[in-house]
Image 1 (cartoon, rainbow, N blue to C red):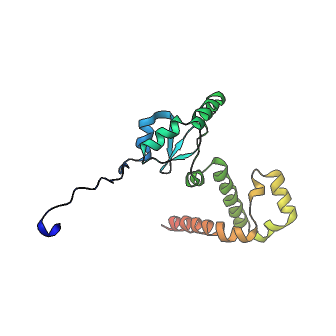
Image 2: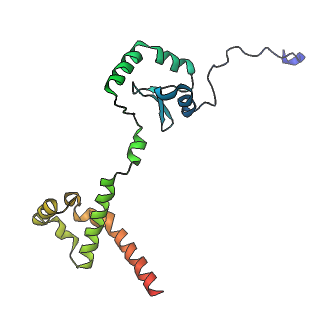
Length: 167
């Protein structure tokens, strides 16, 4: 057919997926029943991942018996727990995490300034004292972890202080 310049009819088996629709677009379209996190579309009351590309899949889910049942239970509880992706959960820095690193860095700095070897932190009586009297003291790691993870930070900070004082 191409030899004679006749073009074939366009294919009718074209996919019925919306190519440029994002999960956020579906959230604005359907309102508070859905939420987006990490590029995925979630049903708020069911806590399941939905296919954001096909609108019919979302409509079918919203009309299903399981959704209506879970939505009724959800409204009774009035607790809005939104499911999050793993990456979003791991990126969350709580105050406890920042406080923990602050305590560890202060402990390493104190040991360095007082010429106390970091191995002394491994002694059972020191461990007992830290866990009993220091807030987040039990979160201070063993000496090898202190040396690998926290000593370079203290070293770099001290070098920067010395360099700024010299100028």
